[in-house]
Length: 89
Image (cartoon, rainbow, N blue to C red; front, top):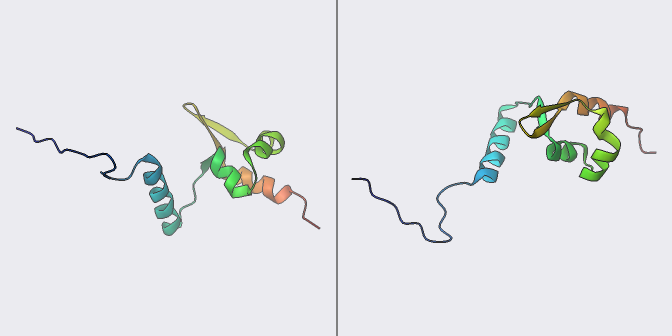
């Protein structure tokens, strides 16, 4: 017979989905891996811009793919867009 472990409110039974994603990203960075596609949030973080600015000014300039309901942005196209932006002066 299998025993069921009682979990009290506030007890941690392991990392949640967001924590697992953060761990995976950290491990990939440590191994020197560069993803081919990133989420919209990661694209905004990469370019250091807000989501509203990304959608208004940059969304049409990057290559995108759909993965189920998610829209992912090609990282190389983000580099191209970032390189084409005018320098601050």
